[in-house]
Image 1 (spheres, rainbow over the protein chains, first blue to last red):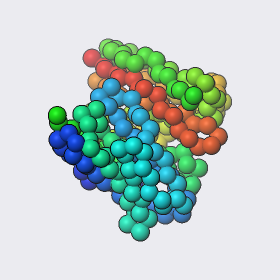
Image 2: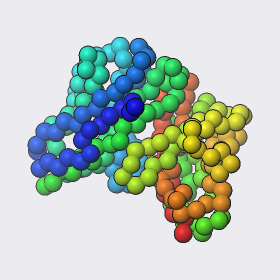
Image 3: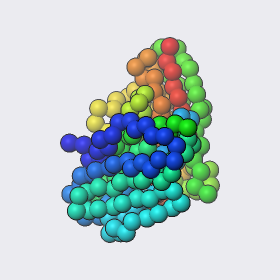
Image 4: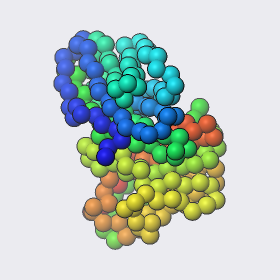
Length: 116
Length: 114
């Protein structure tokens, strides 16, 4: 079974629209970390956020916000007022205490196209 | 801080030859390094985990004799694709971890086998 599921394969929005990227995870560990990474066409992974399983507070960083809900095992990512530069593939990832947090499980990624 | 480099960024090689990819942590010592493979439009798949001075641990389905990993120092790990074939063409990404379990990713190496 997939440990991290990103059901949205590709999303297209027009600039200035808000967009939410979904991430659902599965783990038996009580201690784990969740991540979001951005991968622009150049291929380099850009770290966006790390959240541990004990911190359910939502986070906002500029136009980015994250909603962590353990009850639904979801860690969704919202971009407000999207811009063309936001176009990229976004990956959600999970690491677990069982593997000393070393093993990253990546979702399949969501490709975001922001059109001018 | 926490910069990881990979060399080369792109490589084209002929089928049957071997190619070596280097992964370096530039400003920190990495207790553990990881190698991922990413096929076009797919996710990153962990290939192996290596600790300095010991043998790498390979994920299920990854041929250890084909993908040789050497982690000679706390700042350098190498991945050698031996007898490369076109199906080995992929984007290879390394990451390095410190003792606080953060992983820092390299920029990736695009391998094309002709």
